Amino acid sequence: SVLDDFIEGMPKVELHLHIEGSLEPRMMFDLAQRNAVALPYADVAGIETAFRRGARFENLQDFLDLYYAGMSVLWSEADFHALTLAYLERAAAQNVVHAEIFFDPQAHTDRGVPFETVIRGITRAQDEAEQRLGITSHLIMCFLRHLDEEAAFETLRQSLPYRDRILGVGLDSGEMGNPPAKFQQVFAEARKQGFRVAVAHAGEEGPPEYVHEALDLLQVDRIDHGNRALEDNALVDRLAESGMALTVCPLSNYKLCVVDDLKEHPLKIMLDRGLKATMNSDDPSYFDGYVNENYLAVTEALGLSREDIVTLARNGIEASFVPPERKAEMR
Ligand code: ES4
Ligand code: ZN
Image (cartoon, rainbow, N blue to C red; front, side, top):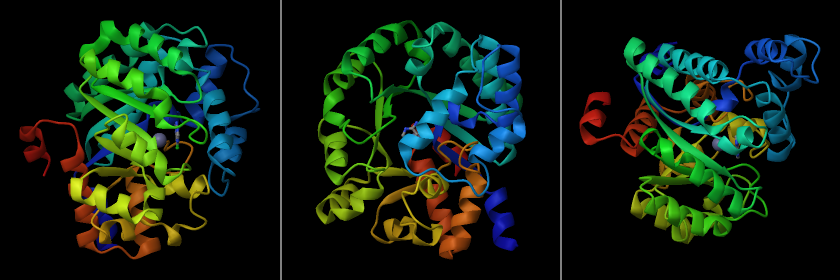
């Protein structure tokens, strides 16, 4: 349709993308063979059956179990390079002009993959994609919130030699029982060490109080997801008045049963309440879609107008961490 063509052709940014969640079944299978990693799947079709198409996860943790198992095939710098380049090529083909990419260093260093291997592979792909395709990208290092704060401090120490390639810090993994307060000290230290931005997953499964904590204790510059902020009117007003962006991920919310049906997704309500909502794919390989598929599915489910779509894309540009000159280029 005309609206579909408009979505596909529109220049977009992506602000919530876990690079490990872009690992496609084919690459997962090939790397498992190359690196002699045992996977609980017989073939590529077996991987697809586990989480593609109709399949959903009961909750965030059920997904995370497969996500951490899947990324265990990544071992060499070449692996991280191939993963990242494949994502950036795919994004560029969807007219994504800029991406702010999360990575989970602890999920690799805890398996014995050196921090340096991870960062070298990813950054080499970023440089190559920018040169060849014109897509710019930033890296945000996420701490795994199911681990303790001391482990996050150790990761922060390991990251210091690569500070010039990492824009900021984030917080992801299992939210319930792991409130932002647990990471207040390490976020403060990251800022002291020159990391320029902070973000946190909050209000995906966790209560509005976790969103408050991300703002008050971690002093985040964006909230990742933020769905459950809608349960707290004062919080909605606070987010709207401060222009705090939410990186919303509709297909993720559907696949993780954060919403029962895409038709019940609160994205339109967020916009109507003045929240700076943006459109993102989260873990596109696991959630059946990159950024265009998210736009298309939610436009159909909620009957979004062309104006809504433009607002979402503009919000993404405004909420990105690029300098004003680059924002002007992307508009
Ligand atoms: C994630 Cl959807 C989601 N939520 C929390 N942590 C994550 N890590 C990767 N995907
Ligand atoms: Zn996420």
